[in-house]
Image (cartoon, rainbow, N blue to C red; front, side):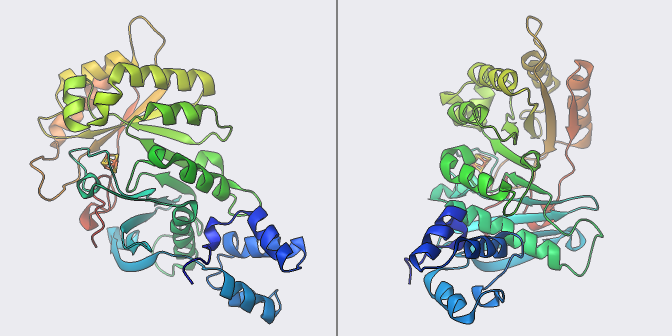
Length: 356
Ligand code: SF4
């Protein structure tokens, strides 16, 4: 039974090939694909446009999802939902859905655990456990799409997923091929049909991943987690900085924006008296608005840190957040303070740790 493929790991071409083996016409594959990605069908036995014997054969040959839900918690008056899953190998995974009046965003995990060990992050404390397959990534979005479609309470906002952000557990560029396959599948107009600009990928600054993304024709949004503006501090907070120091990272981002003409977001988590001094803001502005080069095509998201148990860090107070923002704006750096969702259910940035 375990070798039955997860349908969300199958491309349309795979569906065509399987049905061809069974002597079925290609249009059946398109119907099947639309059941997966348009009708969000849960069980192949519900595919009433297929004869029963074919539905039963498909049900016996495939698995319609491999993630096992172990807990669901809601916050923000039901508008934020975090689901904790178990993967087939027992590893934990989490997905967060946030509904707003004008959009529905799902924050997806690309790995279980994470090898990057950022000091402020609950996921990093788990270490690396598992690279998600494309299907395991897609399945999280399908769950969100069904949840939004079927919701009977809450916001009168869209009844479909409008945005997918890869900011859950893991570093997507560490699992680039599977992650990108998932993006292409979810973008496919024959299936889920989500616009490329509705995807955002967040990286700690893996330069090879940024370079690969620059070669892709789908213009997905890139967010780079920076969190400090000098190497000493950034390396202490994010070990990846020892391998890809800030000057190299900024050069890669500049090359990306030149190549693609796409604006990059920088994420900056604010930790009280750790990285929230106006001196850091000035240094950050030096990188983004250098005196000897064009301003970088970018936007900065300031994120007051979300508590992680067992970490001797604290969230910047409002006065320091405002002072940091003012210092950046005085230098002409576009920036906003991100309003966080899901803090009360440990579903906000950096809080995902496979626990309900
Ligand atoms: S912040 Fe992202 S990259 Fe860093 S440890 Fe957490 S999940 Fe991994």
